[in-house]
Length: 285
Image (cartoon, rainbow, N blue to C red; front, side, top):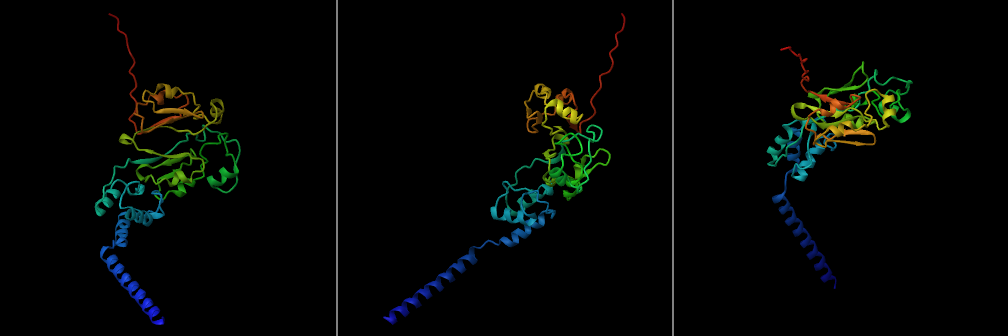
């Protein structure tokens, strides 16, 4: 009986060892060298580790690309127009077209248009002031101007202007990484398509108060009157919660809405100067 048990144990051990050897040889033959591919992809990334891709740094994005063996849903905002095509070429994949984007500041309430009613003396951070204080003006939606967005930007593409108290985006330096938008506790900053010739039209306000209250808080506030939506022939503008919003995918940059806005809350960016009509003269015959 003991001999049978010994033979059984030895046989099972032999089968186990043989199976392990076979599995090892198969794994060696068909293994995919992921580490060198990850290193290769990481080397093609900018190394900013800004988190704009939604992954924990450039290494995390490289690992996700190699693991997925596809670029669908994966992109490096900080890498510009050449990074993803370079990665696609290196891995033999296809890179889809990426629409260039840029950060825009949706607040026109500078110090002249949004008078200061009180003073915040706490820790100089937008997040801290937003949590503890309504703000120094009557607008509870607008920019607080303490520079959380500026500190979050790894590319020096946004700064708070000393005279206006509002962030200013340096378009050519913006990587559309979304770090500034995430750092803003009030959601004032938004990523939008750059547009044809970098031309954009957008509502520079996020105030959702009713018209009179919004206008009293800020001279540049959207009052939700709906004139812009009525004038838009492309149905690119919607008005919800007393606030107008322009869909960049539908907007055809006709700029009718800019002229129809009674408060100047709609901005036009990078357009040539409008032509002024010449005075008409009547001549006696």
